Image 1 (tube, rainbow, N blue to C red):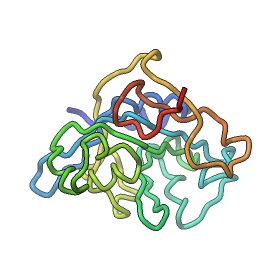
Image 2 (cartoon, rainbow, N blue to C red; image 1 turned 45 degrees about the vertical axis):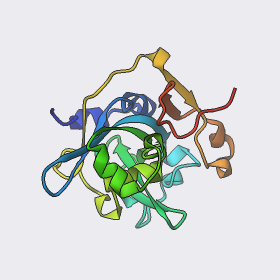
Image 3 (spheres, one colour; image 1 turned 135 degrees about the horizontal axis):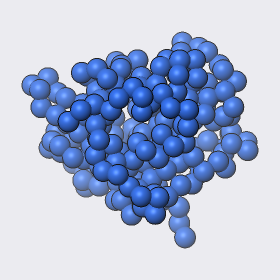
Image 4 (spheres, rainbow, N blue to C red; image 1 turned 90 degrees about the vertical axis):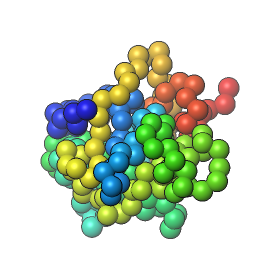
Length: 201
């Protein structure tokens, strides 16, 4: 399967890219050449300079955020709670620091490797959160700045979901972001078991 092209990542509409990432296959090969892969089922968009929830709000450039200013199709990894890595896709042109957090994925290939990495638990808990999926797929800080057109990690076409199969809502864990905390910039596949959190009611 061909890798997703640069053109996909450098479009101007970050929210549309966040929706379009649903159904794409995230591939992280292991040393013996086998593929560990999963389908993206939940994303969150972060709109750079204007977005008070984004690490790059107000065009903040630090050692941590510099990756967000790279060309679309670059991997941005950050560490949270002193425990978990989080996998983000940088989008847009160079110096447009937008990124999309991959919040949840559904295992596709080599789920046995994911089970070994995550330990004994139900399969639906393996990858149903941004920290969980990084452990299951073997993603750590060394993936920061990787090119998604390279050979260490990439995305491929998978399923296409219609608007009626996609839900949106507020992002998680950003209550500090004032009016931006309420923006419906989280997208997920309706009724998918691996989505990290679904609003009640």
